[in-house]
Amino acid sequence: MGEVIGIVMVSFVLPLIIVLHYMTKWKESKGLSKEDEKMLEEIWESAQKMESRINALETILDDQAADWRKRV
Image (cartoon, rainbow, N blue to C red; front, side):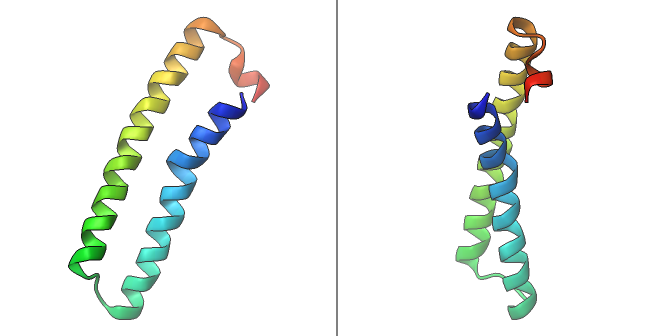
């Protein structure tokens, strides 16, 4: 179950922190550099892929261990 929590943290919390960090930097500089925009896009795409994987993992866990959510 620690793996699920770790995956959730990496999938949602870490990208959120990174996005918020760059939003703060953007407000300070009134814009992102092309390099920052590309990095942010890559992070967003990675977060989307991880979210999809988590949804698949949750579906599998729901089928194989229906009470896993109660233990988290």
